[in-house]
Each structure stands twice: as C-alpha cells, then as structure tokens.
Length: 239
Ligand SMILES: [Zn+2]
Image (tube, rainbow, N blue to C red):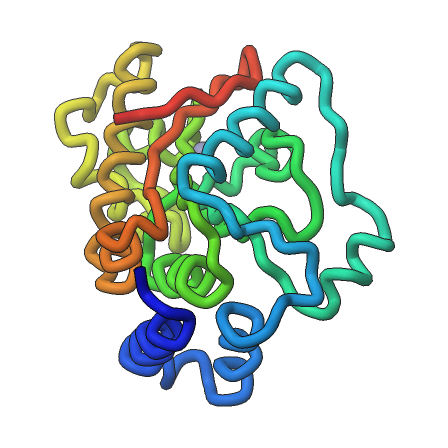
C-alpha cells in the first residue's frame, strides 16, 4: 500500500513528466488540488474502480434503451456545484453523428463524462491529448471508444474515391483499420465489422500514449471498445 504522500509524488512526477508543458502551472496546480491534495468540494464521482465506472455507464444505457432514463445531474444546482471543479468518472471518444449524443445514451448529466467527438471516432492527436487530460488530470476511470451502426465516415471510407474539402483526412485515419472491408459498403454485416475494426484500431492508437498505457498498467484506467445499435439504443462491448 502506498501512503498518500507517495501517491502524491507519483501523480506529480507523472504530470510534470508528461503534461506539465501542455497543462500549464496554474491549471496543473488546480488539477492536482482536485486530484490529490484536498477533499474536492465537488460530489466525488470518480472514486471508483474502472469496472464500477463501466458498470455505471452500462446501467445508464440500459435505462436509456428501455425508456427508463432518469436524466440525472441535469439542472442548474448541479452545474453550480461543478463550477468549483469537475471529476468526470468516464471519458468517451465517439462519433460526431447526431444520433450518438453521449450523455443521453448513457443517461448521465453534467460533470459525468469527458467527451471527445469527431466523425468516425478517430484518435487524432488532439483527441489523444484531450483524453490524456480527461484521464490523468481529471481522473476518469473508464475510456470508452464507441462506434455505431451506419457510421457515414466508415461507409465513406469503404466506398473509397474522392471526397470534398478536408473530409479525406478523416477517412485516411479509418482506412488502415478496414482494408479487408473496402468496397463492401452495401453489406450490412461488413459495415458492422468495419465499424468494430475501426474502434479496435483507434484503441490501439490511444494506447500508444504513454500516459494512457501507464494508467492502464496501474489499473487506474480501462480502455474499452463499444458498438451502439441505432435500432435498439443498446451499447454492446467490442473486443
Ligand atoms: Zn459515425
């Protein structure tokens, strides 16, 4: 068992080593205050294990998918508590698709989930940095990467060919994961498999982060893949 002070030293060293330059001194001090030094004024949410955090998400999704959502933590009182600091218990990388609003499908509210979204739920470096912040500094215990049914970004990648503007930069991040499914965009099962393969690939990219892989090695974080079914609203785990 480590003492509180050694826990502090480890956290401080890691933050300085990996995040000090990016986070900045003032924010770093504030974040460490929330993380290790003083009891948080915020209702502690992330003092749980990665498995408990995952169960909390899955329980919320079960409520959503059975139309029993409780819509917790969605009022001004909650927001005013959070103005003093946040301790989200989960971090999520999901698609920007309008059918994947993360807090709604997990029946959570303000301050619960640190969310990154982009088309195709790709782990580009800005998302990796954001999720390092959400896990190392804010203390999220579960990092869920969610792909979903009929993902336009994945389907466009499977189709191949020219796309306008900067859209191609997104597809280039997906293509290495789904080479075996190229040209099979009309096969529903192939689309699902490609979505799942993309989720697993983006998890691999995330785990190249020394911060994220260290947290996983210390059992402070789990990185898990998931698939969101648009017909049922259900989330199932991938991998
Ligand atoms: Zn999508």
